[in-house]
Image (cartoon, rainbow, N blue to C red; front, top):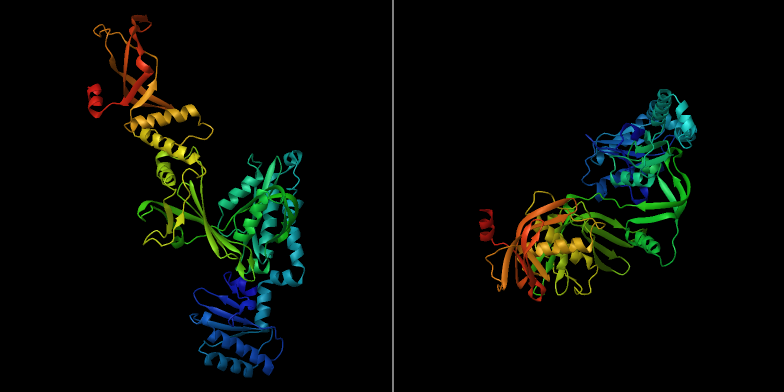
Length: 561
């Protein structure tokens, strides 16, 4: 702890896995190795042998062969004799290391005078005092049980001063962690949502946030490690009991979490236990909810994956770039993790590919999901993703590959399109295609409709408009059609063609599409009928069929002129 106080990035090497002759390693402008012994008197031959073995391991361990040691320290609460210093110097330098430093009792006393709070923490009961100071932030300053009448009486400047003073003392005295305290008015956002947002937007270095509050005030205490050994020597742990009904989705989620490390979310009432957090911020909890998110730290090299669709002749049909959201592992056993899981999604989060490896069964699997695009995604952006998904059926198959390079030989079979679920994705593809065609006629951004806005009438309008814009001729059922009165049209005319203004109403906007050409066969039902807008003719439509199509470019030009 003395070394970590001076060098916060100092690493403590765990002896249980073989320390390679290193107890503490400090990397920086120079690399320093510390070997720590508890010997408190002149060294015996056996104790000297222990020191020599530590140096032998450092010189021979393959894990440290590329480590350039600039300083080597022997730390023990005893100042050496000249003979012992010569022995150590000769042996260390014979192994190719620089002249050693013997940090004896005098050095330990200097450290103790420089960092008295560390001595107090371990030997003077300071750990309990730090806990009480931290608790005063939420208890002594009454932030756990705030009442509105108390807030009105407070002198906020004095209150802030007391809070700042407590936090400063806490930061100074705690050898492991420093603390940030934030007080805000009560928010309408539920605490669980606020904490979830904190998890999704982590701040550099933070290892823990706790939030308390009521209808008036919220207080958040953030915890930051001071050095690299803090979480090892003063760990943050939870002992929890997870409860779920056998065979329920929650039970399956718990099993997937322990086996593959799948993100876990359980509702209120599912979790109880105790949180062991620094400075007394933890404690017992019951009837809680829990969300466990995976570590999303991913290197750029492993971030992207190519999902390739190939036909029965192994010819590439389409491809989709995916981004790795996380890689997780299940709870480890003596043989290692029980399973591994990785989740990939496209840039819009519509198509999700979940890869799993079962260590017990020695099998791997792939699961595909597709989500309904929400109202925040542009239709033109969703179309390529939904087009890819629409082709994901037999006899096509899938290959997973790095962003560049040849495809691997392994393929994932796909089910028949008639058996595939969810089938709603096919409908969303057609909606995205229709909106993308309509987008060419307006500068307004057209987003995929929200599920709450999508009804049969709107879907029908989008699909019909898209089909017309795609060059199709549609047939509409109409028994009677009214046209402007034309005295030159003979009563025995059979085919009538007319232009009709064309637009479509979408949520939040109306798009003008020009004109549609309508054509039908019919006979006069009523001629020169007088209406509010003038005279018009009423036709009885043969077989009730009216054909509609877009104007050709030549026709559009003629209309414009």
